[in-house]
View 1 (spheres, rainbow, N blue to C red):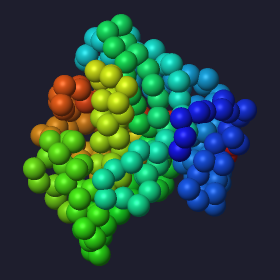
View 2 (view 1 turned 60 degrees about the vertical axis):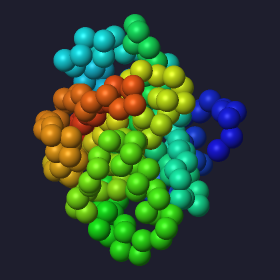
View 3 (view 1 turned 180 degrees about the vertical axis):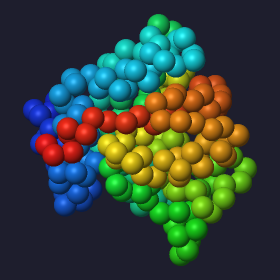
Length: 225
């Protein structure tokens, strides 16, 4: 990915950035997320509510600045950068904020670490060590899904690159049954935390960056767009 960006002209503009264009279908996360965020032209209402109800008063002042679909973040040991559904640059009264938004409908958070490491290469082991260091996790159970580690670490990596004091990973789920929420909750258990949908959780300070995670329920009308 280069460092020059062209504004979107609507939801369909997002399609060209997908790693696999066949994922561009109604009732799938890529298309659903694009329609939701393009219509909002900033934070969708459920994201605003997440911040307005945050325990951290500074998070209640978060203002939207820019968003970039299919944002790529390079990790050690990888042959190509991994893509995040949406990167949002925002700010509070005190600092910049970096956010990774992970869209979900019925799709899981990728493979569990056990499966991801089943044919572990030196590169994969190097990547996992790097993610553990970023998140401050000396041990990660093999039941945790790799995607949650990558998306959360991506928010931290970009916070340090942009000089932001806060990093946030948000799961924007359009599943009426909150599919895969227990995987998200299990991820937060690694930090000794629990969560409910609609709650912004302070995970801790990681390398001088305050890290948060949240799960929000998206509007079902976007599933059929």
